[in-house]
Length: 235
Image (cartoon, rainbow, N blue to C red; front, side):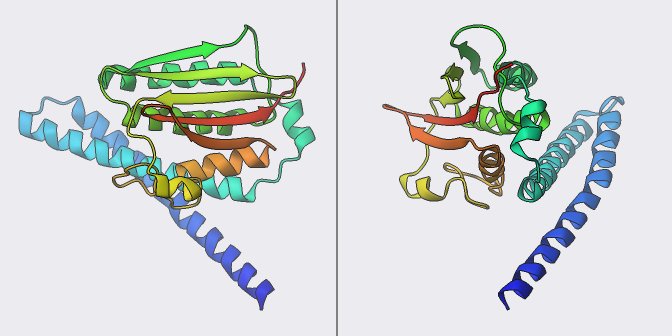
């Protein structure tokens, strides 16, 4: 009975994945159409409606990516040796994601700062695209909750065995009762308003699959520190 239950659950997960995957193409088409419409000579009311549609489409695309990322993370089969051969440069990934998120930081009047111990590359066990997705989740969360005029600091430290990334913000932090379930599927991070709760679960599943650790620490006065560690690859 337990085996049948597991097989049925896996079938449901695969079906759900296929359905969500099929949402991606029409959503991208809708988003592209609205972007083209935005370039037309619109009156103020029409422009506001197009902007609302763009925000909604972007939100749904983000949800689709979260679901697909979680499914891929749950089903991942890479071995540590395969991951080490294609070890990504964690420092380069951080720089790329911070560059990507800089316009959002500017719009929110938040300073985005990178602090690294030492110089040079930091090769780690992992896969670049999903590592960048982890960084995007954590840094974007920090920007979402950071108050205007504050600083979000992304730190990079290393030891002989691993490399650690920290993301610090001065936002409201995480409610104490959520601490134990923060990285579970569908958990709501912080004083959440509408997020489905897959981003941090994806981060945990991805980092742990690569034999790393991830967590949250309340800062001394206010705000949050999210962090993760990954094994170093010497090369």
